[in-house]
Image 1: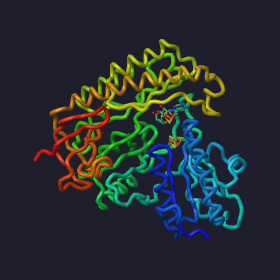
Image 2 (image 1 turned 60 degrees about the vertical axis):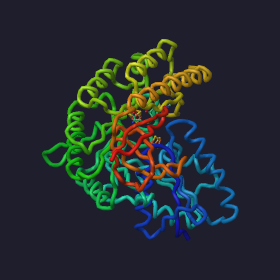
Image 3 (image 1 turned 120 degrees about the horizontal axis):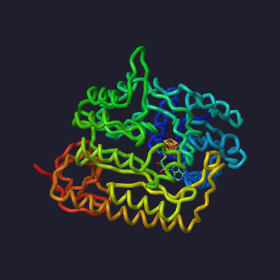
Image 4 (image 1 turned 90 degrees about the vertical axis):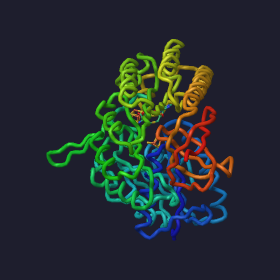
Length: 441
Ligand code: SAH
Ligand code: SF4
Ligand code: F3S
């Protein structure tokens, strides 16, 4: 009999939010969430399929669980999330120690599936939904000492970038009711949270119709900013094709909206962007960056970019380098292209850039970005920022760490500061990854 469950989460912030939904669904049925895997009768792994190595990692973990199962054969293992949706019952064949498979839109069925698995059957539900937003579930905050929470505002994706598996694992785009989002934000505020991040694969295409009224993303952002004035508000991810000046104006208008935008570019080459089906050009992207700089001077900026997509030439790669040098992102998440079965690219656009070329291009980008991040941090020397303290620094017990509104990590003397405090600090030193500061009294 399953009484206690443990969850491990891989992949994006949306998976972190989903694990909290899953925990809430199971707690409602009387199951108890435990932080120690040794105590659990049910181990849940919330998985990601975005790149091959995300899946390889999960398979490694499943292998590791075999030793736990040897000691306690009654333990059940559930694989949920994007890998569950992508591979479905194939997974029961490949990974013999899995008992339950649940896709991202089927978490309300989880308790029923546990019952089936307790009878010794393999249990699976992977139906995608056009409407499920889990709007009536108040997520269990797994990290109960936390001050920063995720609030999912939409699910799925309709963009079908040719390389990307997400539209297949998460299904069609749907937006969650405004009131249910506001209620969750208020609940977090009442519980002492200090920061929320509104989540979706493309938050800029948020669109909720309520009678004769339609709410788009900047409407929602303004409503949330007004509803929870004491909270810092962040959001992710913005898509360049849909990021409007109206959103930038709302960000400028409210002090509690953090001045930070994550705007994935993917490539700086127009021909690659076209093959990726990103629906914008390099010039369009640069225009969006200019708009950010106009409405929000000093706004923190980050991006996602990957090298080695189908047909990427040295010139295409040079375009990406030029763009990175032009924009000067504070931070970039950089990857090598990984072909995903089932996508348009896997059928029509061969993965034809050699692995060693991908490797050397990625290494070059990482080096350029490291320098740019260092320059960007050096430009903050002497400036004052408000930092939300997240905890004691892992490297030095006499320091605390937190983030500026621009999302830069900052450390400073611990003194009497504690998690959740907002502290004004002046930057006195930096590395490429961290601002080192002193509290300003
Ligand atoms: N919805 C977001 C990103 C979601 S996936 C957006 O559109 O920007 C996160 C990042 O993973 C992407 O921005 C992209 O840089 C990377 N990614 C997605 N599919 C990939 C693939 N097949 N190979 C390598 N990187 C990929
Ligand atoms: Fe994937 Fe593109 Fe959708 Fe982002 S917008 S999740 S990259 S298909
Ligand atoms: Fe991964 Fe699924 Fe998120 S593929 S990036 S966990 S939406």
